[in-house]
Length: 534
Image: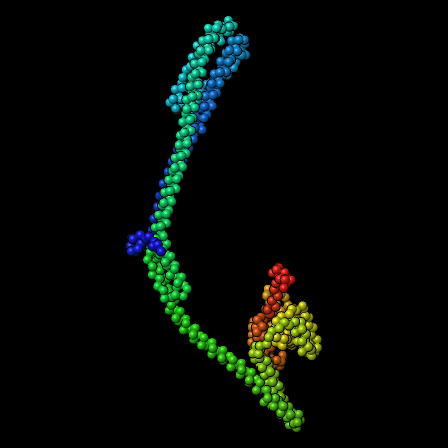
């Protein structure tokens, strides 16, 4: 393995390695700003020089070349107008001469404006101006006067004019040559400036890359490496190795952070030890609680079962006394015997209900698909007498098929329908049972038009032996809704009272929906072929 090169001050923990991260950040940003500013300045100067060269060439030299051509054209037009006037002596032929003079003056003015600062070109302009002025003053204007007076020019005069105009053309040719040379020089300077820009950009890029690499190596050795070490050790602690120390060297914040995290590790280690002791105690108490619950359920079952026989004897003998000695004793004795018989009967009902409550979930059977409509029908059959006496109307919607134990779920519907019939108002009871799918469960609703339950008692009604009315007004043991909750929770659902109903009562409960079978017929298109081959 190649050992990573780390500066000496980073290895021994002295010098810059002890700088705070803020100083490292300030130094890094300062170096980057200085290098970037120098790079921007160098590139800007190179681009500015290139822009100046381009401006000189495009905005001055090239337009000056075009103006020189216009100057030459203006002089040629003047000479042509003079020759036409000399041949015809007509004034309309001399008119273009004046226009040519105006164009010449405009071209000269524009040339001096563009390149008047160039010493060589300015001298050429002065020469052209001088030659053109001499040609016009010593030849053109006298010739025009002579043609107007005599009508013709002598051959000697024409030869003199040609010689003088050739001198003018020579000066304009020299001017164009000078401008062409200046344009070539400008193009060469522009190319050189462009090359300098490229060279400066390459140098700047190399310098920036070198600075970035140097800063990256320095920061990695002085900052990133301690952070990586700290992160590695923190992960070891996070994976469960709480005995691993977290001390690392590096910037001040990193060392302080490692110390804080190590202190937290030690506190966590202490808390884990305490938590383990608490968990062990909780496990022990949980086992005791499970054992106590099992013993309590067994006791409730045995007690309720074993109380049946002596209670039947008490009830039987009390009824025997009532039949045999009724009318032979005084009225108070008959009343006492009636109280004893009624108490024994109610005790039998209470014990039977308690026995049924304790059996829920103790003897689990395999849950099978059951049609809830059949469950409601069975519950109605069990309550046929009370339904007929009360004139109750029971409306049943479309009910699903769920997984469950038929006797237990029948008991749920029987208790809810029985409560609706029992706790009725002045009108005949009307019960509506519906169900609707909600995601992976069915939501059942059992609503009636009875006396209703206040919202403040929404939880109390599900507590065993809790009653909201006296036994004389509404008989019962107060165990029915508690059994409903226990059965529904045993089947993986929950039951509650809808507090928003203002008239009557509405109980809601959920039961898990039967998972739909997965169709694998399209998952393997080659399976039919395999079957044919087989």
